[in-house]
Length: 113
Length: 116
Image (cartoon, rainbow over all chains, first blue to last red; front, top):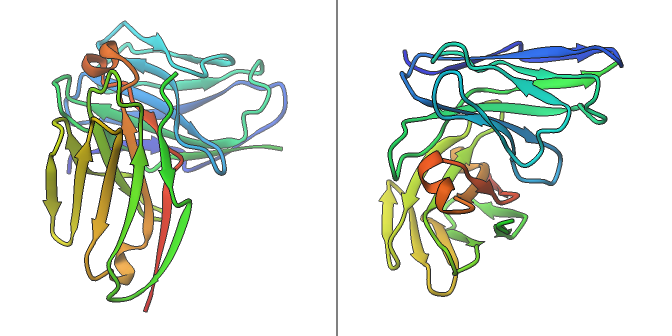
């Protein structure tokens, strides 16, 4: 089955640690996205990538980093510079063609110990 | 920054009721409007992508309309069932670059609960 896999489902981090969230897709989509969800707010875009080896900052990129070394993979690193990392993180992908929707993974919930 | 608003924030209906909710967006520089359904413990699922003023789309008991001149879209559910309980999200590209890059600005969602 084609889809997007995010791992782990739950992640705990100590203060001051970097942590990496995994996102893998086998849909052969060119574009991939990372969103953050906080209670009572809409999804906010952290980073996005249109093609391999290229990515752009979204609306709330501070304290995060990404890489796009393979088409299938778009890992997100939450660095110690992110002041409020506790949130639900969603990864998405999309065919790079007008009118196409995004396809989402199941998400990772990150909590600070 | 594009402002996409959804109302109401939450909605409780009885099984069999028909219901609707709203997504508002700036009518200037409109490019597209997406609707997604997000059930608890699942991933968001695309319902519709709408681009033209007057567009109407339907998927089973769910339909959506689009008015780009006044900046709103309605999502309708006919004869709600408990399995329709979910958060319904709308989203729109924030700019022309967003149209080709697939960037979306999301509303905060409408939480629908259908009681048996």
